Image 1 (cartoon, rainbow, N blue to C red):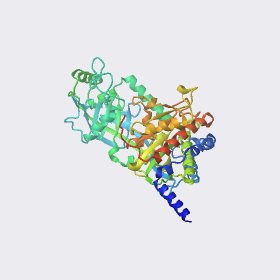
Image 2 (cartoon, one colour):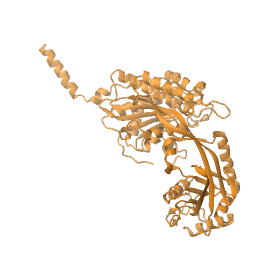
Image 3 (cartoon, rainbow, N blue to C red):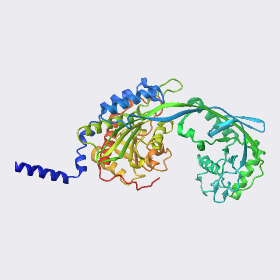
Image 4 (cartoon, helix red, strand yellow):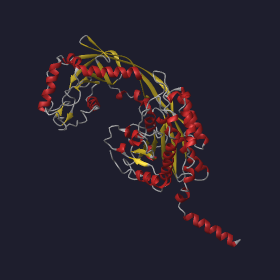
Length: 533
């Protein structure tokens, strides 16, 4: 009996010396292997079925998908958050019903004479004074907003920025434009106009009449295809400071507003380019009468969440995401099932939840907590993840990283015949260690080709900004985004289950599992010590 006592005491003392991390980090391989192609296929066959009609944001069919995912989270042992597996996302549909303008008694039609970069409600009969601010640039020798009496007025600016005779942009001195000359340059000018107290921005197109007409026609086609309705966060509609109309007008419409003719506007632009600085104009700006009416209706939609509480580091949270919405039914009645976009990511998150749930049930709960989340509204502008980042269920300062999975079940044209790959985007941008974890776990367990092509900050596709991880990254939370590239069925009715490579999803799912296992169990939290573009 004495010997038994000392044996137990010895075992107790040894146990006290074993770091908790070694206890927690049991062999992950058996749990990774529970992520199976056949299970992924079973879930995706339902998620991407015709009966769910493409899971359009806010649709009844999307709610069916949400319930399916929530029931799975519950079945595999995940807990609800704040008593629910659903986070209500406050979205509204905003439709612009009546947009018109009048200058000196002459009427101008929306999408026939002008278009909008940004619409905001303007009561019928509103007569706004205008002020002219050249190119609307405030940089170097360009001081277009100096002494400009913009408070309570709409600011009129020329689109883009001045070029010299050699075709170089004056501000940059090269063929590359500054921020004011890029396609989104109107946003820079809008910021300046807002700061000056203006009530709106009127941008004069830099295109000739024929080219501008073609641009308006293109916008009309888009409106017919996608409708006049836009889904936005309810917070945005309640923030009156964010509402600021920005319209793009023809040179002829501008000439009427400025009390001049098109030739005089062109002469002004030439003078600015020659002098390479802001110059005064003799335009006699007038009043514009605007009417911008809208309607808003609430959208009933949810992020689906399942929580696995950690052990000794449970206040720190690893987030794993995918979006479960898609684009619904086309105008011609064809269903866009979105099997790859992002049914593939959704079912991967479900299987990851199952693997970690099984590990926890068998006594191998991770040290850090894990939030599994399928988000809504990605196809409408990353709205579900943006809502979460504005209304987090767990403090953002305690969020370790986001591992985001969006389109992982197909091959792109560049990888035909060499399918064992995945594009990874973002892992090196905020943390010096996240990519190292990725590469270590891939080398140790999976052996995929990790393609960083789209991680290039000069990537014209800008994929880093186009999925839900970005709403974490902009809050300085490290991210890794897994993506197989686009294919011929992207946002088309042909994105069906029959074309999915489930072995590919299985490999990516297991890779993300090993990464999450390592990140959630390591001693030190991932550092936020990089700041790469």
